[in-house]
Image (cartoon, rainbow, N blue to C red; front, top):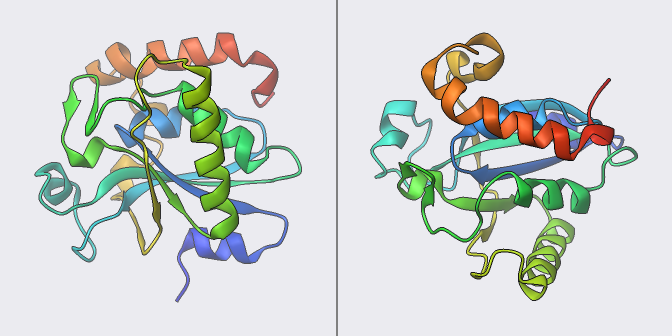
Length: 189
């Protein structure tokens, strides 16, 4: 049985990227607004435990990272452009950490779906490291996607459904505002 991301990938007009950059609520909120993105699903990848729960992943012992699986139209948004945007919405130089979120579940990661994605990820990271934008080297892992597990329903569209929650106000809203100002022309209308 194919999961949502695999079904979308089977459709030649869409591609799927699986990315980890800290809290999946933050990534989902940003990618939801990006022109060319068809769907964003929060979930888990990279660990050994089958069908993990949020509580299990939060312990940092499952090996899973909080990720988003982004289904996008490559005619509107290339995989390379998606990665470039991904690197602007989190700190790819901190190992197993994004702000106050600490642990392997918050690592910066690209879970590639094919050789083409693997090569593109390596090239983008090399370009960004050469540009010296962060002052520290990028530590984002590039790993083949084994299995993506969608997170529980209450994590889907978390920011959209909980905009007044304190974490959303303190962390997600400023990140989203910065993204909107920087990439206004790339937003959905």
